[in-house]
Each structure stands twice: as C-alpha cells, then as structure tokens.
Image (cartoon, rainbow, N blue to C red; front, side, top):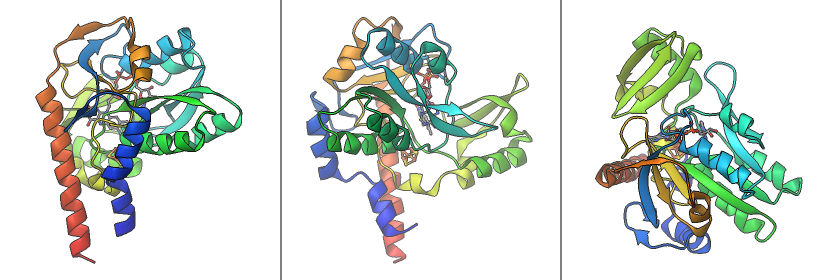
Length: 284
Ligand SMILES: Cc1cc2nc3c(=O)[nH]c(=O)nc-3n(C[C@H](O)[C@H](O)[C@H](O)COP(=O)(O)OP(=O)(O)OC[C@H]3O[C@@H](n4cnc5c(N)ncnc54)[C@H](O)[C@@H]3O)c2cc1C
Ligand code: SF4
C-alpha cells in the first residue's frame, strides 16, 4: 500500500467539508457529522438488521423520488456485485449484507450516461464520497439519493473463506447470512450458527480499510447501520433535505438509540486510521 493510496482513503477534512456544504444542510456534530435526526427503527422487511435500507428503497420507488437504484447483490458463493434495481422485487432480492468492498460508481456512471436522472445509491462510506464527487461533476444533470451504510471494515472474500474454514470449520459460500455484532462475526450455515471474535479475522480484512476514518457514511443523505440499536433494529441518521423527504411518513417501529456507542466506534475508527497512517509514514 502506498502512502498516497492510504492518504486518499483517509478523509481529507477540507475536501469533505466542501462536499458537506454542497450536499448536506443540517447542523454538524463533531463525531457523527452533519445530521438532523437519529433514531432506531424496525420495518416489516426482513433485512440484515431492521430492513430499513430495503424499505427506504421501496418507498422511494413508490413515491417517485427515484426510478433506479444502484444496489449490491450476492453473487456466486460469498461474493457481491453492484447491480441496478428498479422494482421492489429486485430490491428484496438484494437484502442482507455482504461484508465486502464493492465499487458502485461504475454502475452509477452507466446510469448517468443512459440519461437516468433520479438515482438512488446504496454504498459504504468510501463509495459515498466517490459518488458525491461524481455528483459534483454532473451537477444539475442528475439527482442522487445516497443511502450510506455504517462500515468498520470490509473483508477480502477469498481470505475470509480461508479464515472461516480454519477457525469455524465452515464453507462460507454456503452461509445463508453473515453478521457482525458486538465484536462477534457469525455465519448461519445449514440452520446452525458459527461464530468467532471479529478480531480473529484480522488477516482477512482489506488492508486499505485500516486507513479509513468514516464509520457512519458522513456524506450520505441517510446513513443506516446496526451499531446503536438492539438486535433486529437499524440505526438511522438523516443528514439532508433529500434524506428528510425520503424519511417523511416512514412506516417503521421506532426505538431508543445508543448514540454513545456509535460515537465510541466512530472515534475508535478514526484513531485506528491515524495510527495506521503514522505507522506507514514511519516506514518510509
Ligand atoms: C462492508 C460492510 C461493513 C459493515 N460494517 C458495519 C459495522 O461495522 N457496523 C454497523 O452497524 N453496520 C455495518 N454495516 C451495515 C449493516 O451490515 C447493514 O447493511 C445495515 O445495518 C442495513 O441493514 P438493513 O436491515 O437496513 O439492510 P437491508 O434492508 O437488508 O438492505 C441491505 C442493503 O445493503 C446493500 N449491500 C449489501 N452488501 C453491500 C456491500 N458490500 N456494499 C454496499 N451495499 C451493500 C444491499 O444492496 C441492500 O440494499 C456494514 C455494511 C457493509 C457493506
Ligand atoms: S472501512 Fe472504509 S475503505 Fe473499507 S470498505 Fe468500509 S468505508 Fe470502504
């Protein structure tokens, strides 16, 4: 990994502030970024957590807020790829998380070049930043709604497969669901849950992720994750007028959110990024 790549992955404060000013309108919180609402919610969709992402995509389609969405779908085995959805069925076929780093900007550019104007994108924080930059370039030509996911780190699929085979004795390709919660990685295979500490899977993590310092997708219109919510609920952070419009009259059961827990992980991720970069520079 070059210093240049690592520095690019670290959020450049002034660059992000310009993007924040351009696309987000609310007050800024030192740890969670710009936002106007923070809550925990569960929908009728059976998703990775509270099914909020799927429910918001379906709501957005129904209300004509966007007509296409770039989402991420499971491929063969434990792989994932960006794909385009334009119906509730396509959204529901992609529910659940694949803990992998997936590029969504190629599909987004394709949609823009096809003349699509109202587009939603579901992505990790690093991709949200790339999407905002594209939006800057095509200013006025398209309206993009970003649903950003919380993300502490992503895994390399092949290495995760090896590590989980060794530590859990499973074939990851056969996992119906994988989940990271409270520092534990679990995989559901043939109806049985297998788990270990996420820390034990360090070798499988994408190296670039240790330099990344955005946990809550601070440049998204709406951010969604599980940290801060109880099991089966999603934490939702609304950051812009676009996000507020999407969340208006949102049909979900709400619950209390543990803001401190989200702040704790956000700070922890920033510290990790600083340490990783300092270490890289010391080896120059
Ligand atoms: C790499 C990664 C790491 C994550 N780490 C954390 C974490 O540390 N803490 C935390 O609280 N939350 C984390 N999340 C988010 C969390 O796993 C859920 O995605 C989120 O809570 C939304 O749940 P839901 O039930 O609302 O989603 P659902 O309604 O199930 O919808 C999930 C959506 O996520 C999309 N998706 C699936 N995989 C990917 C991917 N690789 N890249 C982009 N989009 C994808 C699908 O297209 C789908 O639309 C992570 C997500 C990813 C992708
Ligand atoms: S940790 Fe950062 S670089 Fe890695 S996938 Fe998540 S947002 Fe992207």
